[in-house]
Amino acid sequence: MEDSARLRTRRLVLLFWILVIIFYFYLSYDYIRVRLNDSELNSYLGYVVQLAGNENRPAKEVRELILVRADELGLPLHGEQIHVSGERQNLKVSVAFSVVIQIPLLQRVIYSKLFEHESSYHQGL
Image (cartoon, rainbow, N blue to C red):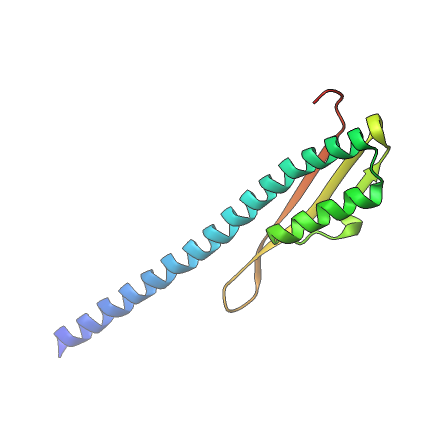
């Protein structure tokens, strides 16, 4: 009797630790995925600013290009979070958005990260 109770306790403890590991793996994966996608968006932001500055593209088009890329990357970015000022050699774009990391199944926010990027046109790049 005592051995079977001890075996059940060990199994429950093992199951608990497996669930904890899965939980942390999910949170880590979600966080790393968001960081990598944000880094890619930041690189794209620099590219778009250079392209728009060289080709004198309107602010609306710059905003749309950034929104399309953010959507492809699965980042929660909206048009009002993108600020485009100036044109050609004075072009400057700033982006700020927040991403939340949620607990699986419960959909409760446990972590919120604010991402802010700024890029401006540089002659000759």
